[in-house]
Image 1 (cartoon, rainbow, N blue to C red):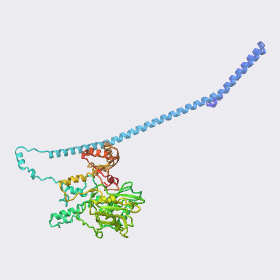
Image 2 (image 1 turned 90 degrees about the vertical axis):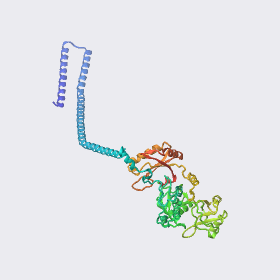
Image 3 (image 1 turned 180 degrees about the vertical axis):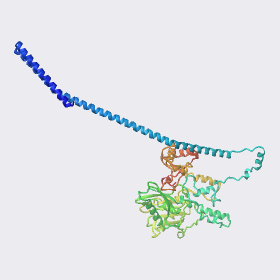
Image 4 (image 1 turned 45 degrees about the vertical axis):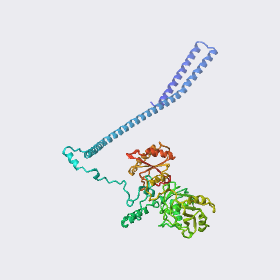
Length: 559
């Protein structure tokens, strides 16, 4: 039976019961009227009871459809709940099937990889056995077999005396070709053979050694030694040709500054023979605020230092020599002339060479000489001029006959007002002084120790040698591990500012300093502690060598 039919039957049954009650009331009323007569008050009570009954019956009849509606809503809610429960059950079954399939695939892959893993284990065991057999064979080959009986007597007779045995070839204590007559202290002071940790130098000039190599000296040992001594000069080292520039302005290209220096120095009339541009090489820091310039001649480097304060893009550029620069010794054979007309126009680099800068352009050469002659006789003098126009560049070099007048001239003329700017008078060559090449006595060795003490002063940069090889830096992970190890160990001695380990890159296949490690500390004290503590330590079964490194070279990455 449908819901509508059910409701209709319910209404009919209720109406029938209502009619039956009405008929029953009428019968009771008729019977009551016939038996006795009721008072008006009794009738009114009965009427009120009838009305109350009618109202209750009507209310019951009216609330029945409402109750039916509530029962329909509950039935729909139960139906939705059953539907959701069935959907959840199907989802759980589907997830269970997926997990079963995943486990089946994993087991299948494991079964497929198991033969390959067994094959790899067999290969590993085979290689291990091969290596073990090779090591055992090598140990057996190197094991000393002690002779006994007759074989012992034969071995004793066949033994070679110690003084007759041929020693293994080694490169220690073998002097370079052409330098057999030069002592070790002379070679160190020349600047051509730096101590461990100093920047790498170029090889000696083969052209200068041609006399010795071709045998044109007629077998004269003195001529051979003079030829070698002519090449063993600090002016041939790369330190003498290098300058450090700083306080550079912001520039888009390094080449623009290099071209500016080439044009400026190349426009000066100089005694040095130039082949093309004066600069031979250059290198700048990553922020382009500092750089290292290498000239083709030491004289051009000295000229560049004299022009320190040169304005480039409205900024004065500071130009200095590196700390490992070795000042060449004075030439005792130079002529001593007092006549102004005969003064040589070339002033060679020496400890007593003086540079005079900020000379007013309107001053003539005679006026400058007159000012200098008040201090004493001049050995040589040159006023730098433009190669094309012949105009003064405002810088001059000179040297006095009496070397003791050098400090007096620098103190007396420096700061003198001759124009818009005060004169800047100072020694043109400032660095480590070289001893005489002929002095090889014991006292000269003590002087050598004193002269190099200032050069070995502590800095904030520590250089670590013999720790790594280029092959250790090829893998990026291993490279980072090495940096972390070095940083962690060095931080025990003080705060670290920076750490650099040069290695090959795609853009630079031949970088300088590969195989070295550079650590920059905040102060020299921490760097000295690390140098003393790490020297002689072991790293990857190698003995560590430690040295100080110049901070100016570190800034421009001149490793």
